Amino acid sequence: MAKLMPLSDLAPRYDGLLCDIWGVLHNGIAAFPDAIDTLCKYRAQGGIVILITNAPRSNQVIYPQLTKLGVPREAFDLIVTSGDVTRSLLQKRPDTPLFHFGPERDKSILEGRTHQMVSSKDAKLCLLTGPLNDGIESVEIYERILLEMRDNDVYMICANPDLVVKSGNRIVICAGSIAQLYAKLGGKVTYAGKPEAPIYQAAIAQMTIAAGRTLSKNRILVVGDGLPTDIKGAAQNGFAAYFVAGGIHAIDTGDLKTTETSARAYDVIRHQFTDLKLAGICDHLSWF
View 1: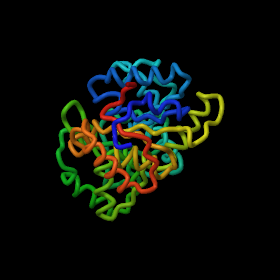
View 2: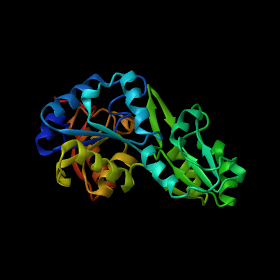
View 3: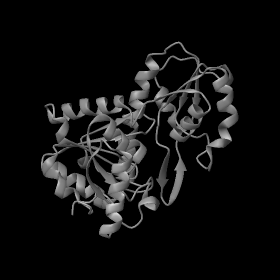
């Protein structure tokens, strides 16, 4: 099976897709036409598509964003975000002084919350949604503030476990890289999104609503381009996975057009995730 597989080869085996967004459907600037066409064809055959993303915002914010990027509503059924899961985690700590570590655009996740908003020095809870500056090239720039929070025993909720995303041709650091450093420094971190179980539980609940019935777990396929999030999440939560190699790991996997290189990619993934049911690999999401 060491070859690239289009989704049409796999579609008959699966009733539903849990599909990543950034890197699979778009690059942060524009949608990928082949990927959109693929999801539309899959849904036309009766398949259910739940978009599952580590975006640190409510799903209601993502719908219009996808429209602007050129992802039509016909390509998917519903969206589940790590921001949705984050809101439920915040509700469990309603009276804890909160510091928002992230850009202004992510503040929608705090709508309706009653937490006292404080500086990092006065916080006991940190909501991490991303870098304060999208242009940073190394998370070490935040080491001082992270050490300060660690010493103050600040509990961190990471709303976006992604380490990086590919924006156009540029790799951009995400909240997961900052959370990873905080944990390395001894800080306490909970991750709201992929690869952790709560976001998959929320996605399956939405899939049940969209399908009007409960789908068998072995008939659900996880589609994604992130090894530490999408593929690890599939392995940890018992789903089959379809790896999109042309996303953030494109440099690592290289050109997959030969049997030798695609076989090497299969071996790397299987070695890293021994419990994973790897359904297939593609360079980019396409129907044929």
